[in-house]
View 1: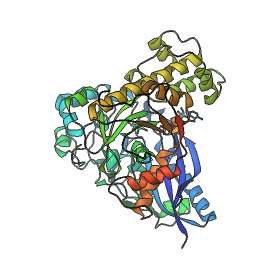
View 2: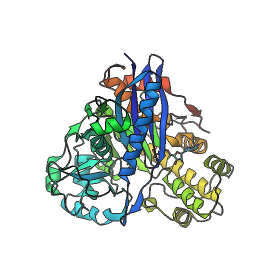
View 3: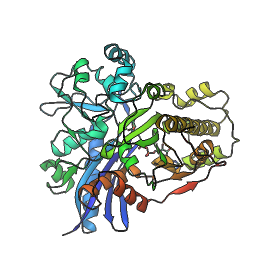
View 4: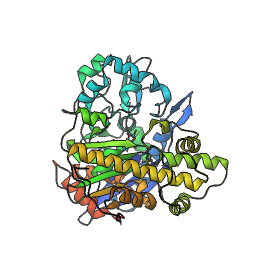
Length: 479
Ligand code: ADP
Ligand code: LRH
C-alpha cells in the first residue's frame, strides 16, 4: 500500500499554510503545498475573520495536497487543523453560522469583562481555570453575545473540522483557552458555565489530540479529490500547543518562545500553578498535548511590527523586512522602549504613532523597529525570570520557534538580555507538532504518555541556529 503522509492545516493570525509531512526512521520531512495571507477585517461594523474565505483556502490547500501526495505515490492518512485560540463561531442545529466570527482584537469585550467579574470574581476564575487575564478570553466574548439560545460555540479549528466532516467536537488544548475549563481536571467547569448563565452544552464534547474527529463529507471529498475515508484527526488545535509540542528540546531545562503574531513565553510543567503570586504575575496555565501545562505569558509579539509595516506600506514603498531589521540592528543599544505586554497595543491601526507616543523620540522607521525589538527582548527576559521564580524551573536554554525565529536581531537581543543561549527554529514548529501528533496516533512514533517520541522526532528534523549571549547566567529560581 502507498506510504502514509499527513496534512497539517495551520492558520495563524497573519498567515495560513497547508503542509504535508511524512515520518520515517530519519525523522520527519515537511513540504509546504499552499500558503495564504490572513488577518482580521472590518466586516459588518466589527473586527472579524472571513471564515468562508479561510475555508476556501483550506479546500484549495487540501486539493493541492491530494495531488502532491498522489504524484509522489503517497496516501494522505490524516488531516489535522490548528489555528489561533479563543475565537469561535456560533452554529445552530441546522449548521447555520449565526455571524462571522469576531476577532479577539475587536473592542466589544471592553464592557463585558466587568460583567463577568461581577458574577465570578477574577480570583475565583483564576483558581478554577488558571488563565492569565486577557480581555479577549472566550468567556468575555461570550458575555457580549446577545443570545446563545439554540446555538453551539465552535472554536475556529473545530468550526473548520465541522465543515470538513459534519462532526462537532471541542479539542481539549484549545478548550483550555476559553476560560471555562477546569485547570486541575481538564474538563468543563460546569458550575462556572452555570453561574455565568451559559448553556451546559454550549460547547460540543471534548476530544483529546490523537483522536479521530470524523471522515470527509462527500462534497468535501469531491472538492478536494481526497477519498471520503480520509480522517480528520484532533491535534493540538491551539497553534501554540502544537508549536510547543514540537520544540526540539533535548533536556528538561528549557524555556520556549513561540514567536509569531504573539510571543508566547514560558516553560512546560506537569501541573498548573494557581497561586495568588502566579495570578499577580498574570501567568497562564494552558493545556498542551498529553496534559502538559504551558506556564506562560502572552507578550505583544510581532503584531507590533506587522502593524507598522502595514501602515508604512499604505504611505508608500517600504524596504522588505530583512532589510529593515538589518538597518535596525546597526542602531546603538539602549534606545527607548515600550511595554510590549501592554494592552495599549492590542487593537489595529495607528501603531507607529502609538509606539512613538509611548517611547518618545523615534526619528526613523528603523528606530521604531529597533524599539519594538528591544522592548520584546526586554519583555521576554522579564517573563522568563518570573516563570523561573514562580515555577522553580531552572532554564538553561531558550527555544524560539515560529516565523519570528528567523529574526536574527530579536534572537540575539533575547540571548543578551536573558544571558542564555537561544536555539532558533523550526520556523514551522506548529505544523510539525500538528503532523507529529497525527503520526504518533497512527503508530509511526512510540506512544505516549509524555512527549518524548514527538520531541525526539522534532529534534531530528530541526535545523536550529544558535545565538550565544553576550554574558552568561542561567535563569534559576533565584531569578
Ligand atoms: P502567525 O502564526 O501568528 O501568523 P508566524 O509564525 O507565521 O505568525 O510568524 C509571522 C512573523 O514572522 C512575521 O510577523 C514576521 O515578523 C516574522 N518573519 C517572517 N519571515 C521573516 C524573515 N524572513 N525574517 C524575519 N522575520 C520574519
Ligand atoms: C497565537 C495564539 C495565542 C493566543 C492568541 C489568541 O496564535 O493562539 O496562543 O493567546 O493567539
